[in-house]
Length: 328
Image 1 (tube, one colour):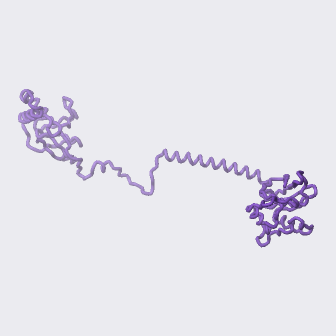
Image 2 (image 1 turned 90 degrees about the horizontal axis):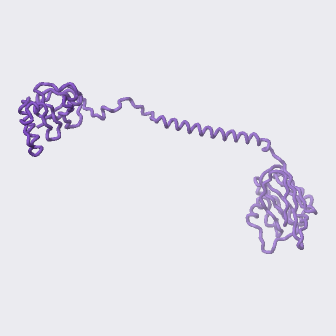
Image 3 (image 1 turned 135 degrees about the vertical axis):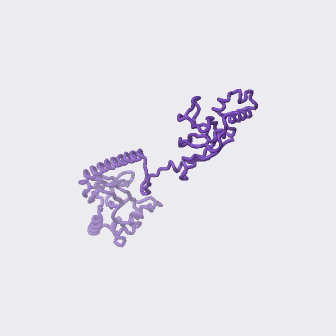
């Protein structure tokens, strides 16, 4: 039989062999002296009951409790059959030793078995008891120190990278300040055509250079008629050249040697149009639609300007004085 009771000091629920009824003992939890409820049992009766229980549990042992000696049986009763720990059978009213182990080396608290969860007078559980009662600031977030160090290193690396990029950008910008100013460029070249298997100067061919980022007003495009072969005059050429130069380009007719010279006010991207005066396109060869569309930004109508003459329409990036030769 077992006795189940609650520690009078800490409220721990305990289970102990009934042979310890009426004795004083130490609570295995709070280590305070407590009184085991129940009527005291004599040493002889407790020894006989414990010996009988041990004999039944082992299937009929050969030695009885009397063979073991009454004194020993009274001092060390057997463990209960319901898994409760065994208890030392001290005389009634005597306390357990102050030391945590007896003379034979057993646990001084082995006579107790906890048969229920922890119970406290305050109603708290062990989890609640261990809970950190420090106030929590809901406006703050706890971050490991290693994470802070890592973030600091990353910020330093990013700052260093941007600092280097800033130095590189600043140095390139300061060195190229003079190059940002407009720089006039001279473009020279020649235009030739094939005649009877020979290359001859294309006298009277026109060469026009036009800035890609500028174009005349849609209602005031350059007329195509003055540029068409056989319709040139000094007056119309002068007026047309003045308008193209105001736009940032230039226009010229090739001389008898096939040479030409153009002047542009600055470097940049340009369109170049070379239109032959004497060489005609093969029958059935039509101008490219993209060429007509781009030429139509500046001249109207573009198809009449090209007619059936051979032509070149191309992009050019001007970075300084240069020479361009065309063979139509």
